[in-house]
Image (cartoon, rainbow, N blue to C red; front, side, top):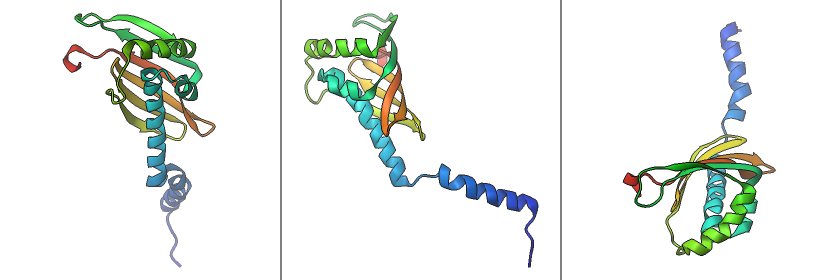
Length: 156
């Protein structure tokens, strides 16, 4: 009987310990990415359509948003403007009413990274670009932090 060296045994043991936990099936990974993308789309559509139930579903009670706005015709950014979940829920119906966006208004949710409990994404919307941090809580992806700015002049 041939004996394995101690380094080989250690490497084999580590691969058995970490491989199943570290590697999810491609289907499970894709399902998580789609769930994060859906949460980001709910966030955007909550504002676009003034649908508070979408925002309630995806915004954490302690959500914080911080951003810089550049008005049309100017290159200077103003801010930072902080926002809480409560403020977002107040703003969404007003935003929807003032903007009156069509059903097919531009929006894009880009999933940047998904791990077991955390994810990051980028929301591109008519107001600008948001970078979003999410946490998985009770099986749902919830938005905790957002940092944003209006579109740069070269990308409007």
